Amino acid sequence: MPNTEPVIDDVALVDFILRRARDTALVHVHPMAAMTRDLRGEEMAEIGLLKEAGAIAFTNGKTSVANARVMRNVLAYARDYGALIVHHLEDAPLTQDGVMNEGEVATRLGLRGIPTAAETIVLERDIRLVELTGGRYHAGQISAAPRSMSSAPPRRAACPSPAACPSITSR
Image (cartoon, rainbow, N blue to C red):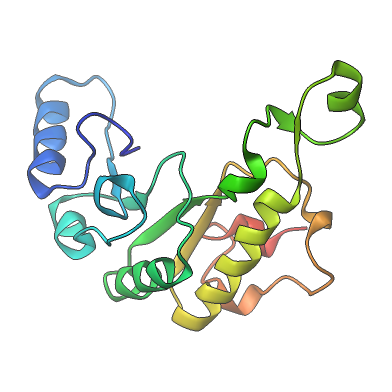
């Protein structure tokens, strides 16, 4: 995940990680790079160069890209390089101060719940953007049941394979 200090949004960092892992790691290391500069969600990172350097996927870690135009550009650009986009589903204003999924358990515990819509709003937007761009997409860290999505059927045509888009292809 690129949500490190410094953020993995530079070719030199990907190269460093891969060289260091090759020389010292006991496991195989496959870095994911940031899809936006400094994980801010405002400006796309150099996806093509990062992919050529060895990044296997692109994500903003535990933050969601709120700007639909930026997300569309990321998906379209990544498509041209065959790059996978892994997106954390979260509408930040809806999750503010929440600590668990909204429901009976949260109420009984006296904890502020996060509505399912905080994930499904972003997921439904992203599904439409994948259809529009043809990009490869994986929805990461889903905690809400898929039944909470709109009554529209899953958009299987937008997904190149079930492994690339499990949240789209399975119910």
